[in-house]
Length: 181
Image (cartoon, rainbow, N blue to C red):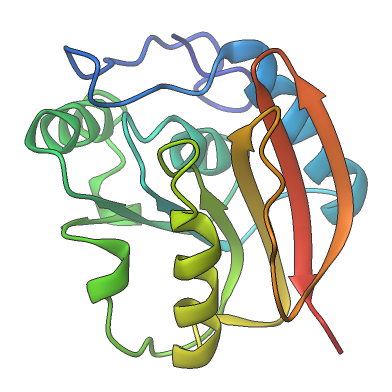
C-alpha cells in the first residue's frame, strides 16, 4: 500500500498484520480522493479525522495533499502500532493525534472538523451510529465533509445527513455526505 499523491506520493505504508483490519484498496482511495478534490478543490489547511483508521492511509493521504492536522482513532493494538509507525516514517508527528479508543468514546471537540473519514467494519452499522454521536457532540458542523466506506451492497441510513455523492468501487461503496440544513 502506498500514498497516492502529494508530498509523500509513492511512499509505502505499513498495514496491520492479520485480518482484523481491512485496508482501503489503492483504487478505492484514488476514487475517493478524486471525488473529494472535485468538491473541495484542495486539502490545504484542513482539520481531518480518520476514524476506524486501520493503517491510517486515508488520513495520511489527506496530510500528504496538504491537510494541516489529522486525528486517528482506532481500537486494534496492531493497527495502532501500524499508524504510529507510518506517522514516524513520514515524520508527521507534529500534525497527528493518535487515540487508541473507540470512536464512540470521543468527548466534545474544541471545534468541528473539515473532513471526516469513516471506514468501519462492513455490515455492522457502526458508521451510522458514529456519525450520529459525532454530530451531536460537535465534531461535525455544516462545513464538514463526511466520507463513509461501506460494503458495496450496504446502504447506510445517514439520518440527519444529505448524501452528496456515491460510488461503488470494487467491494466498497463510498458515500460523501454533509449535515442536512
